[in-house]
Figure 1 (cartoon, helix red, strand yellow):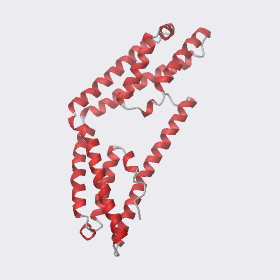
Figure 2 (cartoon, one colour):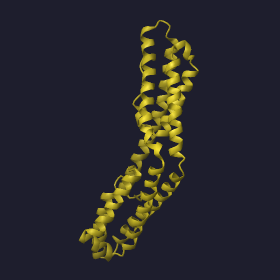
Figure 3 (cartoon, helix red, strand yellow):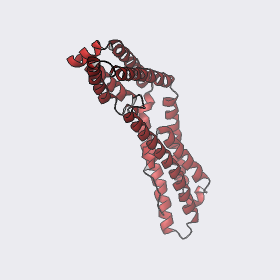
Figure 4 (cartoon, one colour):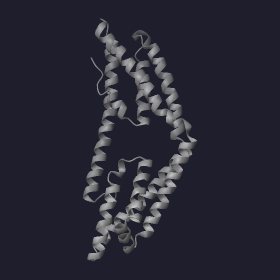
Length: 249
C-alpha cells in the first residue's frame, strides 16, 4: 500500500500546509504511535510544526498585512477604472476609438493573468504599464488625447504606496523568509514517517495498525487535493471571464 496524492503537499498554501501537518500529528497520536514505533518520528514532526506555526503566525498576523491588502485593492480599483474608461472610449468617434484600442491592447499585455501575480509582481507589471504610457510617444499621445493622464497619475501613486508598505513588511518581518526552509524540513520529516509506515506494511505480519494509519493519511491528502482542484477551477473560471469581458481585470 502506498501514499496517494503526496504531491498535493507542495501545492498547498502556507496555512493549508500547516493544517495538514497538524492533522497528520493528530492522526498519528490516535494510532498508538508507541505500538507502531513512530514515537520519535512524531516527536520530531511536532517540534518542527510548532516552529513553523510560530513563524507563520508572525508573518500572517503582522500589522502591515491588512494594509497591503487594502493598498493592493486600491490600485486594482484604479486599473478597473482605466479599463472601463477604455471600453467606453472605444465607442466614440474614429480618432478616439483608434487611440483607445491602442491603449487597451497595451493594457491587456500587462494586465493579463494579473489575478495570479504576487504583490511585487503586480507592482512590476503596473510600473511597466505606466512607463509604456508615459514614455512611448504613440501611447503617450493617445493617453493625453483621451484625458487619461489623471488616471495614470493615480495608478502611479497607488502602486507606489502599495510597494512601500510591502517593502516595509519585508524589513520588519525577519522571520518570514524562514517559512520555505521550515516547510522543506517538515516535508522531509513527513516523508520519513510515511516511508517507515510503508516499510512496516511490506515487512510486518501484523500490519493492520499501519494500514489503517496510511488509509487515514490518504483520506486527509484527498481532502486537500479537492481544495486545490476547486481553487484551480475557480482560477480558470476567472480567466475565462476575463476573455469574455465579464471580469474587470
